[in-house]
Image (cartoon, rainbow, N blue to C red; front, side, top):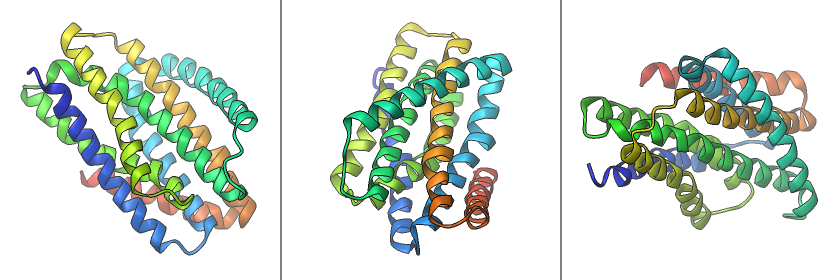
Length: 240
């Protein structure tokens, strides 16, 4: 299918956009920074441990997960230190945290989506491909939620919404095109790339978002609403 990369891009953008819409609603409903920090951290951790990590263990195994995650954590620390040195984004510490979290999550999801696109490419046009496209749309919704929640809370609007959606969608399209052209079947390499993104996303959730929630309230309050976010992801995943 010559236009398969466009189909995968549209499917990814649709899921991300719906997730962004939900994030916008959450922004309007949030009653305090600590609540939304905690809930967002729970959503991220739930997405990682209930979906991304189990699927990647099946793809590459525990050793690959350990190696990729370790390197991902090191990469996160490097990016974190680099952003501390070169960015003074706003006059507000809370908005700085939101923007930095949003940027790191966007990069991580983009990295994650490239190997997903490679795996998707050879199957498009088949029954399996149709199933994977449906799964891609549904599972990109919580990814859109976790990416856009901190960015919307930092005050960004529709132009950022479109720009970030394009950034996240492009790797899916490129990966699909390459996967279809070259029929790439390197599960260990794909799993390694996904594990890098998993580690970065996890560190953003714990160090940036949950840590800030605790600093602005207390551990028990943050844990309870983090658990609520985890539960939302659980209910969502068992329903799709």
